[in-house]
Image (cartoon, rainbow, N blue to C red; front, side):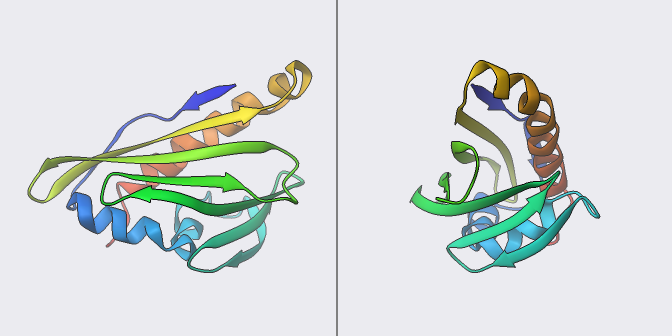
Length: 132
């Protein structure tokens, strides 16, 4: 199952957005307020509970200024990769979007596709309003 968020315009440089997102502590600022609990974060990993699911994200790789690839942790109930793409649009503007590739069965896909799409669109949109 692949989910792609909407593209969001950001009034910051590609490098500033990349630097902000490389610190996974900052993922907390992108999550829907009041919709998650048990937040734990560090530079390379974060975890939280949302809608009864525990999710862990770990940095796997990155391409300077343009892509950050995260993977699910061992304790996550869903096996997935989450890539964040950042495109330069000008000296002080950029665009970002997320693509999630989840390896789930058909039944689980029906349960999680809509909430995950909503979450990733929210995260993408919230990134446009973050002060970097």
